Amino acid sequence: MHVEFTITRTDLRRALLLLAVAAVAMIALSGCKDDAGDKEQGRTLGGYERLVAQQPSQTMGYSPSRNTANFWIKTWSKPGKLSYVYLQNGSGDLIGYYVFKGLPVPYCVSLTPPDQVNGRGDYGVVRKAPAVDGVYYGEGDCSRYYGIDATTNSYVEYTAGLGINVLIYDQPLPNHPNVKPLGHTRIDKDGKPVTE
Image 1 (tube, one colour):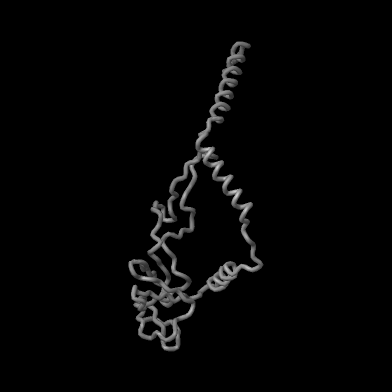
Image 2 (tube, rainbow, N blue to C red):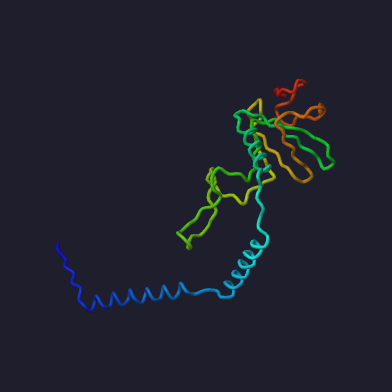
């Protein structure tokens, strides 16, 4: 079957006219702005630039923050490194401890991005992304932690807050023999983790 299409000059003019009208409309609509908002933003930016010129930020020859962050990386990047997690009540008394392989992880940490963008460019809509278990979560509960028990490899979970402070060390605390283990692992008299 063979079909022929014929485009007349009139059809071509109409198509070009429609394209021109669409282009003019897009340009006109893209020029729409919120003048009041632009003025506010301009004032804010101008104020910021003026303050930066008057009070520039200082620079450092050494960064103690970077040094401490690098120390944290060196400490916790070792596979099998144990963490000693002590729970402290509002009165300052240690009420118990856990011994974990690695650091405890808060529920608000994720291995995948928490959001996804649907659409492109300025028209994209940010939505929650599904978690690795295929369900959607809220913002995450940063007061709930989980970890791997040091001697049994069992899952352990605890909640901080509500008067409970968490103290994390890379070595057991000396001189606290009466603090009871809360997980399956306890610290023996030589400071070594053993199964409870």
